[in-house]
Length: 465
Image (tube, rainbow, N blue to C red; front, top):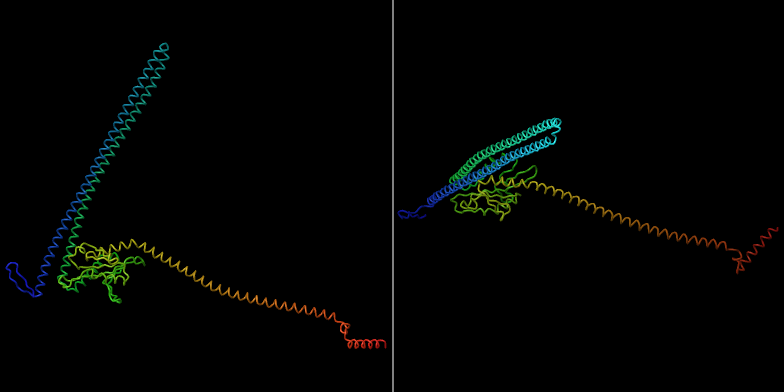
């Protein structure tokens, strides 16, 4: 039982746990709604100030452009006046030169008339001819002067007309820019109003979820909400992307969702998602950092590049309510967001990963080339090993053959020496045979000598008979 004290009468009364929790929830909801109204009014006033600042900047820019155009217009008018003055001065100069030339010609005529008085008839004829010639020249010069004056006037009128057209065009451009700025301002106002409306709808939606659902239903509804957002907003523009629940718990744990997208056969982005939420009346309040370690382990086990915690925990934290929170300083490539930043974060990571897709392809190509070089080197090394082993075997057999040949040569040499030795013995034996005579056999052998003498006598006796 809990004791409560009435602030008006001062009476103390007891309530059970359920009533006490209900009262606390009502107080929290009232404060939460007051805080929401305060923040909405701050956002509205900030947006109004931004709109007024944008309008003031636009008006200042338009005023600067008008001042610049006025300066250019004054400069062009000064140029026109200068051209007009130049034309008039040129005309006056031409007239003075022609009058001086006429005066000089008249003086010459007078001198000729005074000097040639005695040749009046001839001089008169010559004078008439010269006067006619001079008149024709004067007329030609006058016509040229009129033509030049007309051309200068036409040029001045054409320049003035062009300047007027330029001024009209600049004024129309300024008016067009004003209308475009007004349209842009109206669009910005509508966009801010639409954003405020969407944020209010999300706040109302989450307030309704928290008041109606149990803890398990809140967590499951957040997952369904994120899945629905993806299928409504990103599935039409990313039809080949993979976004499914993580049902593989073979390693002991699993995440909530896995997002992957491909360009051809190359995977350029992968995200492991974890969704966390709880009731306001839950006794044990969790923090976002309680789930960082598990989310990082799930990311590594499922071979994902990024890890994202979509959380409604710690609702009073200004850090997590401010937008996308990068916690890569604790766990690599990990972010914490509120549900309203679910789609913007996926879009941001997809665009960032697409920019590095070319580098990934170049890395894969370089790795394939390196593998080819490694295979080539391994084949070369294998060839060198086999060739060395075969060379060693052939060299050994060649050495054995050389040894056998040397042994055979040694044996043949010995046989040759023996044959040569036997030939000497045969020669000596033949020589001994040739040197063998009866005299040598019977020398110092009287018995054999007597026998041979008897044989000779008997042979001689037979020959005689």
